Length: 358
Image 1 (tube, rainbow, N blue to C red):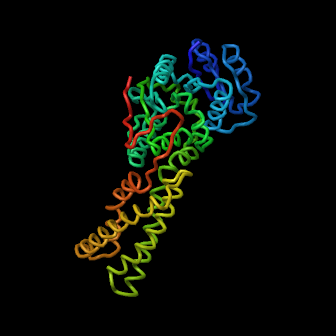
Image 2: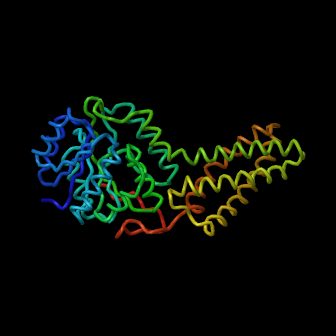
Image 3: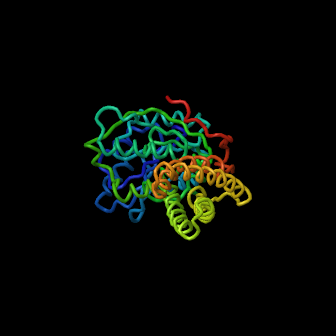
């Protein structure tokens, strides 16, 4: 028996679940029934007869909750055993599960991703969705991950307590794991796997509107914070210019208020993740950034106002120009944390590369 447990969360599965379990006869398999209901009892009984241990949840709680239930069970009953997570619908080939299992047993990484290359016939929504999330993830974290939505992932035993501390009960949970790993500078490795979509991915329980909102919510938090600060800054700038006629003084006053608001929201909600950087570290860094951005803001406002003749147009162009710069500096410097990761995981002071691919 392999020193890896294959964890399969399943909601309303078909006969492919038992087939997958049977073919994974080299591994211990744990199936978590995510409240599928009595109509699917036969499918889980078939999986049990095929060799799986089955845990039943009383009602549907979401993929993230099912995964964390499995992690807690494995940590309690099989300490020291690595975990590979796979989907129940047959879209992960046994040989690809084996490849991830082999890598996680020897890798120093906090997680090993089985990544698809999206070649051949791929449903348009899947191709577009992964591309959009990959680009957004790169912009937000600075980390290149080929397949942010893969469900085939390997986790060393030392990470199980960490996995259960990351919030999220549904599809957004797996993206939050990547976001947290990026924030904590934990190494991630990738293993190439086949791109398999059966019946146009009709077996997926992904809800495009609700689950997309859950997934993209963390990625859009910074944009929302910046938009709020921009609105406050623009309104104050217009009011102060009208009252005083002094563009420079008005820009300084408006920026002081909006920067305080932006700092508070970003520290607690965008980059904090429940572990905000202490004020003594982040506040001086943010003040230095705000002063530099204020200088650039005033210079651009003067130049663009002279060129366009419109304060509104100049303000919009200035903020768009400085948006990505401000985010990159805040992520990499102002709100950067150095804190312990999962036990036994090596953390470096720089972003880890997305490892060797097999």
